[in-house]
Length: 377
Ligand code: MRU
Image (spheres, rainbow, N blue to C red):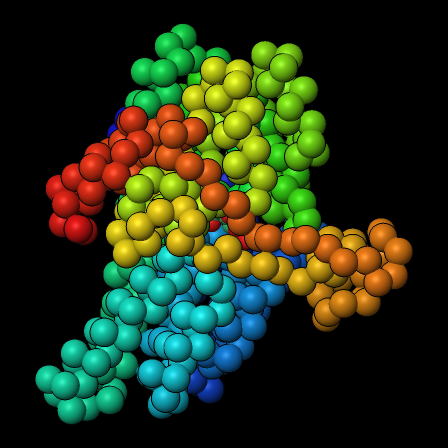
C-alpha cells in the first residue's frame, strides 16, 4: 500500500490551482478558493477577504463537498478573527450557509472553540486568531491523512467483496480532491483501485442538476488517466440490468447515528438499484461526517435549492447571478422540486468506510463502537 501512495506524488495533480489555500499578502490575509462553479471550462481563483464572501462561495457551490466545507468553515472563522471581525457572528453565518453537511459546523466549531479557549487564556485577540488559524490548518492536514487511510481501507474492502479485481465502479456526484484536503473519499478509493491496476471502468453519473459528476468527477478522472464513462443519472438502471456494475461507491454529507446516509440527491435510487441487483453499495466518509447528535435519517435537514437550477441550464464558464440568467429548459413559471440531497437507510448500505476502518453491516451499535474506539463518541 505504501508504494501505491508513493506513486501519488508522480501523478498529475487533479487541478493546477489548489482547491483551498490561506495566503498572507501585504493587504491582509485571504482565503483563496478554486471556483468549482467554473470547472471544467476554466480554473479560476476566488479570493475571500471576509466571512460573508465565503458564505456566498459556499452557497453558490464555488466551494463544496462535505470535508472541504468543514475545512473552509474553519478557515472562515480564522479569517474573521485575523481581520478583527466579530468571530461569533461570522461563525453563525458560516455554519448556517448550508444545512446538510455536518462537516461545515464541525469545522466552524473547531476553529471558534480554539479561538474562545485562547482568548479566555491569554485575553489577546491576536493570539486567539492565531489559535483559530492553527485549528483550521490542523483540520486541513487531518482530512488529507484521513483521505489516504479511507482509500487504503476502501481498497481492502473492495478486494474482499470482489476478489479477482477488474472492478467496474459506479459513482455519483464528486468525491475526489475537489472536496478534500487530500484525494477525497469515494473517488480516492476508486483512484487507489486504478493505481493498483484493479479498476476496469469508473461509471460517472452526471449528477443533475448541477452536474458535479460531469463537470468535476470526469475532470478529475481524466486528469488521473482513469478509464471512465459518463452517463445520465437515469441511465444507471439499464447499466445495472446489463450486469455492468460491480460496486457503487459514494460519499456522504451526514451520517446519522443509526447509519442513515445523506448524500447528493440520486444516491438513494442507486442504493435501491444496487440492492435489487445484488451489488455492494459502499459509502466512504471521514468520521467528521458521522453525527451522533442526529438520531436517524428523518432528522437530517435536507437542503432545498432554488428551482432555477432545474428549469434553466447554463455553461460552466457563465457565472451564476440568479434566476433568469440561464437558458430555460421548461416553460416560464414552472415550479421545480430541487432537494440537494437524499437519505439512504442503513439497511441498503453494504458498508461505511472511514479512516478508522469499515462498518459492515451498518448498525447504530457498530457505528457507535467505531466512533468510541477512535475517541469520537
Ligand atoms: O452539493 P455538493 O456538491 O456540496 O454535494 C456534495 C456531495 O453530495 C458529496 O457526495 C458529499 O459531500 C460527499 S464528498 C466527500
